[in-house]
Length: 496
Image 1 (cartoon, helix red, strand yellow):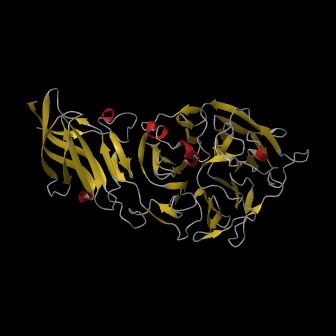
Image 2 (cartoon, rainbow, N blue to C red; image 1 turned 90 degrees about the horizontal axis):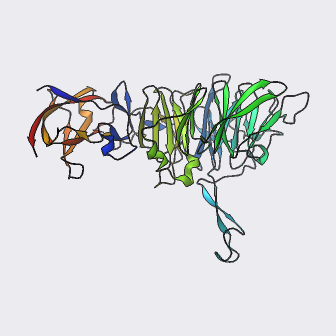
Image 3 (tube, helix red, strand yellow; image 1 turned 120 degrees about the horizontal axis):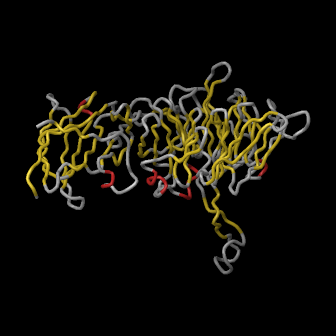
């Protein structure tokens, strides 16, 4: 009888029950697909042995005019900079620290009369968000703003000198961004969460509009509050928690114009967006959205895994990032059982599928100025990703896997008999173990058998008699295996 291939398309499906994912991959971690082949996601090593104080929720990597590489990392307590190696503390004098985790606010006179003890502050329904950083380059210098501190700082590349307040810049800001036209822009300027204010062109110390400069400001027409902004091609998108606005350069005398381009597509947090060239993808309350000249909802086969299981009290921590080498948009988020980012979802925009898994990262920056992407772990260390196949030289065996939903192999009342399986595996054949679970109905108890693909003739003899089965592939070694299509020597067996 001819061999029957198991044609399982790349990507996961998690928007329903396990049975609804029949014929698809349902559960994965630390794997990706390239050209239809399953392979492990690259490993990581510590970028530096410095353990940062606080939780890092802002990263920027760039090259100076002399091609020297720099990295900046912002935590809720500190601002750090690295000149291609060790991180140095460049926290500005007078910096106001923020919270590592979002917490309910406390206040006098909140709640109803008689609730709680006299003289004790009451909890508020409003969260005090965990601190995040927005960072950008002013020429070769770093400009940065912490959401908890609200001031705009500049650092001029000397690791022995702290960052300093930008003179005359607004305070109590949500964040900052530098435009393509060389304006420094404050978001939520001066405590007005709908206000956008920019400096004079090429001069980030002049903020008062005069006939002799091009400084200015605009207020968004929105019911929301500004969360963040990003350069997307020649445009700047500004997100609030409820809608999205487009900021475009008009030239003097107006300088900039802002229009609302989407309602109901606001962002869940200031870092929950990934940008590649003219495209931005972000997570909203309702799911994923994309912008490439216009805004559209982005279909996601695993969106309910995020929106239904996201820890909403900590959603400000969601962090998006681009992995340009593989054409992927990564989003790290805290699940309902975690206070910190513990899971990820990835959109492969080259092959149009999604991947899920577990990995604790609080910030991410693409390879850009560096050789590989770097990310911040919840343990306070910065890691260089797509390097080797280990977790900082510790094994990842047990964490690298892909499992299908049910695959129906029987027809009607008849079972299928599977005598042999063949793996179309391209490299490192012994590196993958297959566990095949099989049963007759969704409610019946499953049996399972494990197979390691190390047979010299490429065949694995089996004896499976079932109506449906699941396949789980697991790494048994820390290497870069590539796994193709499974084929089965299968025939119809007896009825039930």
